[in-house]
Length: 345
Image 1 (cartoon, helix red, strand yellow):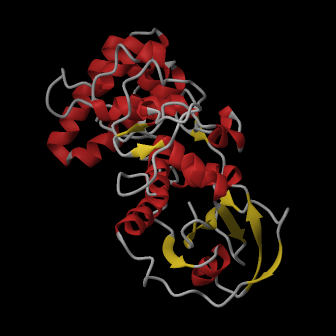
Image 2 (cartoon, helix red, strand yellow):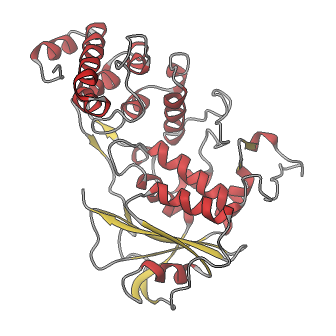
Image 3 (spheres, rainbow, N blue to C red):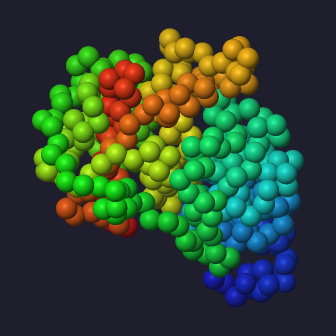
């Protein structure tokens, strides 16, 4: 099987012979698909794919994802080494360079949202998102972290650096809290909007537990916290946002764009901004801003939800390398959602 560890391929990379490297990638991937299946092929050829996505000129790197080489030759959204190959590509080039070159719609969408996470405003330079998720960061999305922390930092020879997912990250700002008796899940909160929100939050961190209650955030936390007495407290949603986005990218096959899209989907459902009875947003003149609503997401309603949402976080006695313990309360509806889990990687 051809991998980047082959001496000949290393020499091609050093000489910048990218068309030959792309041909080797396609040949190796197609042969592996025929021999061992799609999943094995993606894993075997990922190191070479990473090199091409990272270091090749964008005109060639984008061709990792096209099917012009025939069956089994193209990388998909799940092909990954230290991270998804499309995310590696998105960290290396601006949307201005990539937009005229990218073909497959799923890859194109994820690259666009990665560039938005990295601080680019694509609201006037990219096609609207099919779910209406804005293609620029809202102020609360950018407030809690710097640009360099929003997506993995990929290395040329493979591997990546990424911030640990830890919420809460420390005891700073937290104190001893006696949680109330756990509210009962289900009951009145159950319904399509709640179910969509809960499914969205669960998809962000499939390694965590989720629940929904009618009540305040500490009562929701009591459902999943191990003890009634915890070290916890409230924090602004902007400080919780980075951890919620990163939760989807704990595994190598998913990127932070998955987290952003999933979180906007969940917030839209919490806010009722899915066309099922939520109030429309208005612009500064009092009229509806049509650019803010598309494909089911109303940006104004999500922003209003974030402004009023109360976020409670707490520590657990034994926390894994990645941990997330948060309850999100919407005072307007009296419903709270809780996400809690820990994972060693």
